[in-house]
Length: 104
Image (cartoon, rainbow, N blue to C red; front, top):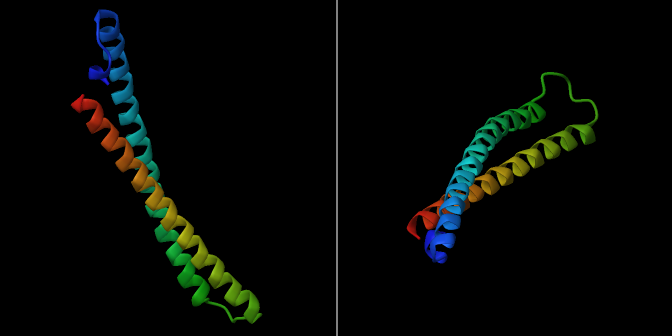
């Protein structure tokens, strides 16, 4: 960020932008890491829901409902796993961007 602008006015602007950009990246990383932790907890809960759907503690009534519940629970796990991958990719993006900002 700093090296892209030259001159006194531009130097001041570059310094301010550098501060905002790096702190903004820190803020994004922190927020994403919190969301990632929440998503990992949610994933564990959803995996338990799959087990509960597969092995109910009550008599299976309607078999269609039984298998539908399993499928739905497994799909929830897949969605949460995708969410975790997206969050991890976003964290990597902002961390790389921050490294790039500090190199200029």
